[in-house]
Every structure is written in C-alpha cells, then in structure tokens.
Length: 319
Image 1 (cartoon, helix red, strand yellow):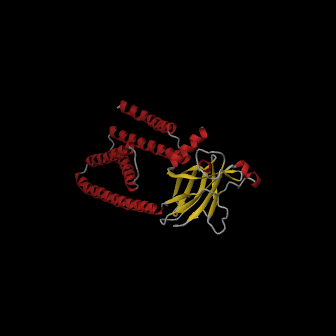
Image 2 (cartoon, rainbow, N blue to C red):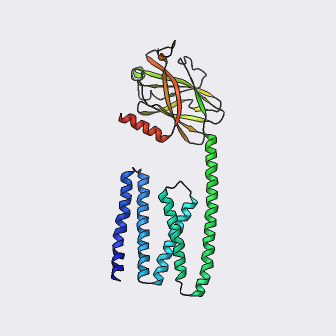
C-alpha cells in the first residue's frame, strides 16, 4: 500500500512539470502569437487539473473507496464527453495527434462507463442505470451528429458564398500615361501622403500604370499596395463594380523585387496578388520616360497566398 501512496504523491509534480515542459517545447519550436500563447496556457492549466483528477481516481481505486470512485470517475466522464461533443460539434482540420487524442478519449469514456456500472453493488439499481446510460449516450451521439450536419451545411454555404464573391479580374497593359483623366475612373497609391510634391520625382523615379478590368462576377476594392518594403494605401475609385474598369497608377523607387496588391471582395474576404512590372524602354518604339520618371506597366498579375507573400517580404527584408 505504501508504494501506491508514494506513486500517487509523486504523480502530482510529474504531471505538472511534464505538461508545462511540453508546452514550452512546442512554443520553442513554433512561434506563437499572443492570442495563441494565452490559449495554450489555458489548455495547459486544464490538462494539469484533468490529469490530477485522473490521479485522484487512481487513489480511489487502490484504497477501494466506492464513493470516491463514482465522484472522480463521474467527473472524468463528464469532461471526456464534453470534449468529444465540442470536437464533433465544431469540426475543423485536426492533426494526427489530435485525432489520436479523440480516439483515446472515446475509448476511455466507454471503458470507464462500463467499469462504473460494473461496480454498482445493487443489481436492481444496475438494471435501472444501464438503459438510462444507453439512452443518454444514444441521445448525445444523435445530437452531436445533428449539430455536426448543421455546422457542415453552414460551412459549405459560407464557402459557396465566398466562391461566388471572389472577384475574377484582369489587367490591360498601357504603354503611355493617361494625359487627361477627366470623367474617368482612376485610383492611385498614397505615395504623396508624407512627401512634398517637389520631392516626389526625386524620391519615386519610377511609375507604373495599367487598366484594371473587372468581370461581371462580383464587386471588389483595391485596399493597398506593397512596394519599397512598405504598405501604401489607395485613393480614388478603388471600388471596381462588375463589368467596369479603372485606370490604376502607382509610383515606386528603383526596381523593387516584391510588389503586392491587397484586394477585398464584397463580403470582406481579402486576396493578395503579386505584380510584376515591365519597363517600357525595353519595348521598341516606346517612351523610356515621362518627364523624369521611368514608366512601367503590368507584365503579370498573379494571385498568391498570404503565407507566400509574407515569406517573400521576409526574404526581401533579409537580403
């Protein structure tokens, strides 16, 4: 009996330090945002308390205390099936370890239920409990299935709405700057917000212009552009209606490796596009400059993920 008590006492600090170290190891390998770190800390506290509860159930077993078995075992069952219900009600992509954990919880829950029913000393009470537990578990599984179906339908509907709202657009390269924009829809990057007009050409010796043409599918807006290692806002007719087009112009310095554009659809989803420019002087019979600025147009417009864009920006900053 002394060995059981020693292991019971030793398990408390072992659980505490092992769970805390596991979180530390993950945080050291993967950089967590402040929100993710806070959620991980809450999860660590929950796991420590849960495993301590399992340790108390272990104590109840080796001292053979029936009341403690039902109290601690019932709490474990409640927590396990609440976790399973939450996991199935809010479906998401799960890692292999998470799926293994769900399977483990399910097996432990069923096994612990059978054990707690088995140790009921009164056979008449046991005969009453078995159908009640079966009905409750059957009802829970049914409710979870219904909730899962509803959430999946909602998820599919949102995905369908997102696909319908996603803009499909193209560009028309222009080989000379617009001289007269009266009565036309135009938008510019806010390159002159912090820079005086007389310094503009000196600081931004290059310009790029093109026509952005929308399809009849949906409306979208050009929110901002990235060049010279900085995000710039966009002013003017940045909302492009279905079937319409705008003259788009931006100014940049030298030959930046990375130019990106952020657009937003009608329901708030953001998309990112990489812009590759074409120096017009490389084309025969095309003007090399307009005033003191070298002129460019769009050579390629390619959709990229936010992760790909951030990686490219990081590589440019580290170069």
